[in-house]
Image (tube, rainbow, N blue to C red; front, side, top):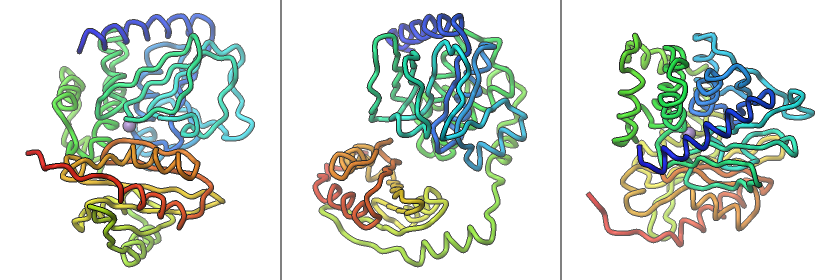
Amino acid sequence: MTPTEQEELHAFHVWLSEACSRGPVPVLTGKNGDMDTVGSAIALAASHPNLMACGVHLGRTAKRVVEELKAPFRKIAAEHTSWPASMGGLIVVDAAAPGQVGVHLPAGIPICVIDHHATSDWALNEGDMNLQWDVRATTQVIDKYLQHFAPNARSDVVRKMLLAGLITDTGRFRHADDGAFESAHQLLHKSTIDYASFLQFIESDSTSPSERGSLLRGLSRAKSIDSGAWNIVHTYSGTLEGRLAGMLVGTGAEIALVSRFRDGQTRLTARAPRSSTQQGVHLGRLMAAVAERIGGEGGGHDGAAGWSGKADRIAAESAFIAQVAVAKRKEEQA
Ligand SMILES: [Mn+2]
C-alpha cells in the first residue's frame, strides 16, 4: 500500500467511525448488482453493527453467492425508498455516478463513495469522502480496509464475498494485475477456502433456454463495421448484454458493443480486449463522451464500460460509433 492509500484508509476509518456513532449507515450497491458491488457492501458491512448492505438489485452471480453463503443483504425499493431514521451517513460502493445506484439519495446525509472506475460523476459536499483507487475491483479497497482496521471481520464468508467480486471484475483474472493477485493471495491466506471449488461454484451458472435463444439471436444480428481506426462488432439484445459483448470480443472484434432498449431506457454495454486498450481504447472515457454529447450517464473502465439514457437505441449506438471514429490508435506496446 502506498502512503497515500494508508492515509486515505485512515481518513475513511475516522469518517466511518463518526458516521456509525451517529446512527445506522447503509452501504449502498450499484444498481447493476454485480458481484463486486454486492461483495464490497456485504464485506464492509461486516465490520460494524451499524452498517447494512443494501441495494435495488442483485445480479445473477451475486444472488447465487448471497443465497449460498446466507449473507445479509437488504433489497430496497427504487421509488419511495424507506431509509432508516437518523442515518449517520451513507456509503456507496462501486458506482461511478449518482445515477448508477438506482435510488434517490436522501439529502443532508454525509456520503462516502468507494470506487475503482476511471471516471467519476459524483458531486461531493463538505463532510463527504471519495476513495477512488486504480485497482481491478472495489473489493480490493474493502479488503485493504478490513485488514488494517477490522481484521476480525474477515471471516471466510466475508473473504468469499470479496474474492468473488475480484474474480468476476477481473474476468477470472484474465484482466488481473500485480495488485489483483496480491489481493487474491491475501484473501486466501490463512483461510479454509478451497479456491478451485469456489471458482467452480461461481462459474456453475446455467443459461435458461430463453436466455440461450436471446444470446443466439443477438449473435445472429451482429454486424462488423469500421469506425475510424477501429473495428466494432455491434448488436442488440434484451438480456445478458455483458455476456454477449464478451462473446463478440471472442469473434476478434476490437470493440464489442451491445445495446438494449427497455421501459423507455436505452443501455449501451461495451467490451474491448487488452490488445485494444493497449492501443489507446478507453471505453469508460468513450462512454463519458457519449453522455456529454447526447445526455444520460456513461463511464467505466478501459476495457468494460456502459452508458444509459433516454436517447433511442440507434441514436445512442451512432453517438458511440462517432466517438470511436475520433479515437486515435497508438503504437502497440508489448
Ligand atoms: Mn467493480
